[in-house]
Image 1 (tube, rainbow, N blue to C red):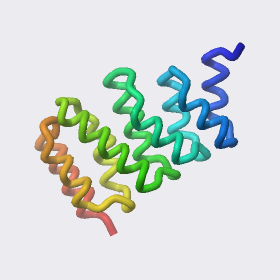
Image 2 (cartoon, rainbow, N blue to C red; image 1 turned 90 degrees about the horizontal axis):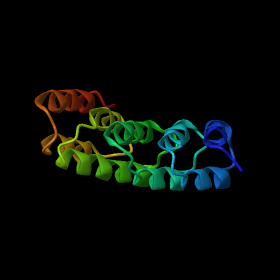
Image 3 (cartoon, helix red, strand yellow; image 1 turned 45 degrees about the vertical axis):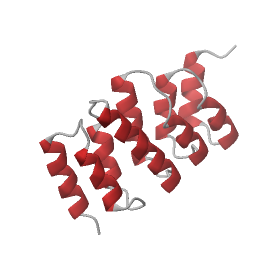
Length: 137
C-alpha cells in the first residue's frame, strides 16, 4: 500500500500523464503542490487542481503555482482566475497568484485587471497589478 511519501515522490518525478492525472485526485495538499511544480502534469490535472481546497495558506500557494505552471493553457489559467476571484470576494488575499496571472500573456490584461476591483484587493495589490500589466510586451 503506497504511503503519502510515495505519492509525493511520484508527483515530483513522474512523467506519465495518466499517473499524474490520478495523483491529482489524492487527498494530500503537499502532493497537489508537487504536481503544480511538475512540468509534465497535464492541463486536465492542473484544471482539476484549481478546484481543490484545503486551507487558506495551502490554497493560495497552490493557485500561485498553477498560475506559474508552464503547461497551464488558457482554460487552466481561466479556471485559476475564477478561483482567485472567488477567494478575493471572500476577503482572502491570494496576491501572489494574482500577480502570477498578470504575467501570463495567455490572458487578456482586462481579465486580470478586474481582480483589483474585488473585495479582498488592497491598494498595494492594485498598484502592483497595474505595474505588472504595464510591463507586458
